[in-house]
Amino acid sequence: MPSTASEPGWLRLVFLRAVARPLALLMTGADVMHRGRLPKSGPAILAANHNSHVDTLLLLSVFDARTVGKVRPVAAADYFLSNPVLSWFSRRLVGITPIARKVQRGEDVLAPAKAALDAGEIVLVFPEGSRGQAEALGPLKGGVARLAEAYPDAPLIPVWIQGAGRVLPKGAHLPVPLTCCVVVGEPVSREGGRPEVMARLKAALEALRDEAPPLRWREEETALEDGA
Amino acid sequence: MSLSAFPIPMDAPEPLVWGLAGVLGVLLLGTAAALLMPRLKPGADHGELRKRVASWWVMILLIAAALLAGRTAVIALFALISFLALREFLSLAPLRREDRLVLLFAFLTIPVSYALIGTRLYLIYLVAAPVWFFLLASFLMCVIGQTKGYLARAAIIQWGVLGCVYALGYGAMLMNVPEAELPVAGAAGLVFFLLVMTELNDVLQYVCGRLFGRHKVIPAVSPNKTWEGLIGGWVLTGALIWLLAPVFTPLEGVGRLAMAFGLPLAGFAGDVTLSAIKRDLGVKDASGLIPGHGGVLDRVDSLVFTAPFFFHVLAFYALDSF
Image (cartoon, rainbow over all chains, first blue to last red; front, side, top):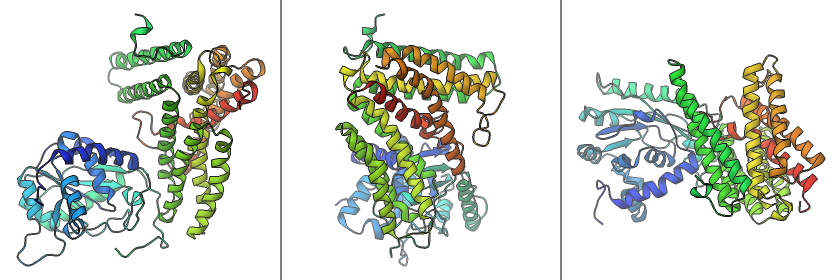
């Protein structure tokens, strides 16, 4: 199967507008705060918190039809390319840019993301690296700062997704319709080194979380758990 | 220009068409006011008013289209409203991850209830949510095995289903009233009358409150509600219901009086009850889904009470089939 991950493709657009977006609206309402801060063109880096598969669906739904073809979610190769069906779905319909979570010596794991930025696309990253505990911000991985450093002209935009962790938390199989809110931030300043950029990104995400509508959902210690 | 210039079905009942034309006229006046305000009072922020009017356009055109399209469209529209209201309500509630299965079950009441309306199974509809969802959801929560906060969460979920699905469903149930028992405006005329009088009551209570409001009626829940607003809206809406009831409903005598007297009170009760619930949930507006209005729950709050009231008064006084 040829790899066509960076080709927009009509099939992907049809999927995103006719299936993914109505589904996101139905399941989450797809409320957006500060929609005007979303980039209209690439290259740009969007960094969002990650609690659910719904996150990707939701973020692909908040862009308008002209821009969404250029949005590339960065997703774990070990998970999304693990079997041919999921791989075809992830590459051709969702349009992911794969990333290896286990680094091999001498390999640049960011290469596919860089290729997307070179092509003027909007790269969507989840710096937590995995979905983690619902509605909590886990530790951020530094790859996003390295990517930002390599592309100083691409704005680094923080995005907080409120509520997706209850629609479909990690380990759950049935989604429950509950409202989600996407809060878009101002581009993060790139002064200083990578640690400073990461600290500012984390602070920006936390500030956006405080701006989002209140969430009274609770994760209890008796929550259904799975090993994933 | 004659009415036939508009794309309306040829068999649309005349009172309904004139009623919709009247609502459209009021909306045009409101739009003109929203456009003129910035010129009359420059400097003040009129964005909220403009958003509010724009949202009214969307809501009214949607409802008008459904009413003209007929029974299936009206039932589908009420099902959609129930879904949006329930999603909003459950999203605000203090629930937990292990409640997800019960929440999914709560959403299942929407296709079930509206299918029962669609298939005219009135008696089963009457017991489906208040008896069978009540029992099965309670048992399901017990099976999941979390007893901490059991009653509080059960009450929240039951309230969501009874308020957002069961009570609102009575509005769609009006479409099942046979034409033979109705004046010329038909079943869609009943729904039209219910919706317009409910919204008008909200607006008139608000306007009377702004103009004459002095004495607060229920300050702990709604600090802006006054006796003057309540009574002003009650008298004006009641008079309109009394005047127009023969056009849109089969009500006569005591039934007509009961509707005129009771509907504005039911609307007020729904408004403040939902305010109390939102206060408990810690929000002023249920969401930002309808620009300038808040959420769906903020718009249908009065309807949660007026829809069952309207249906029951009608069924008790004027219908043989219910």
